[in-house]
Image (cartoon, rainbow, N blue to C red):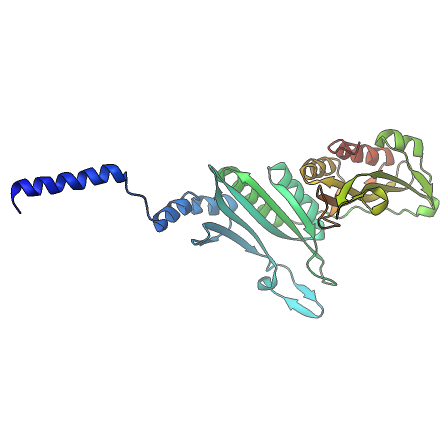
Length: 305
């Protein structure tokens, strides 16, 4: 090729490059950069747990088997591969990351671990059982969040650390509802709602509303918050259910835990309703008026005031 033709050829190549713009990275390269943003070694350092990278999904998952639990279900001794592993999965999301996880807990660990999760910025999205008749009883607490690797991984690390510690004895009281002597006026004033006394139990019901299958549903159909008190003014127990929309769940959880009221379950009672209604079951022991104030602090986080 003559020098003039070589020069012309190079010019054409350069022109084509300008028109086409800079070369785009391959999918593999983009995926690699996406995963690299997770800084998996930092996640392991902050959580204190080893993990595994799923390159195809760009997800890094840390797992902590509950090999310390000698769990028996129906006469069968279960091991961690049978669903007894706490885990948290991290995935890039916008300028930060998101995390989702599931924590395997004994009953006496549930509320201390939940408080650690909430106090460190994680959402608690469900609390339920996976087995029937197991010994010891175990509960599963789902968590989630979105933010920086530093904040989320550090929060998950504190949760894992708390799981390694002993639980807290569950509150109990020697109360016979048939012998209840409650000042219901004081409870109603503290709670902001009045109820009815029957069989030694003072029960307050607060309705919510939603729609399902094109029909309005409310308190009579089970869409309600309720609280049942029994005992005496100084030694009382309360159990109940909070009905709330999804946006109210985290503030309600924080309010109840700050009031030292135990969370027993978080789940839904229906499917297809609008807006979606979450239900939270609780249990508390203490002075009746204090329990009512604690519940009031949770109700104040909802539109059912």
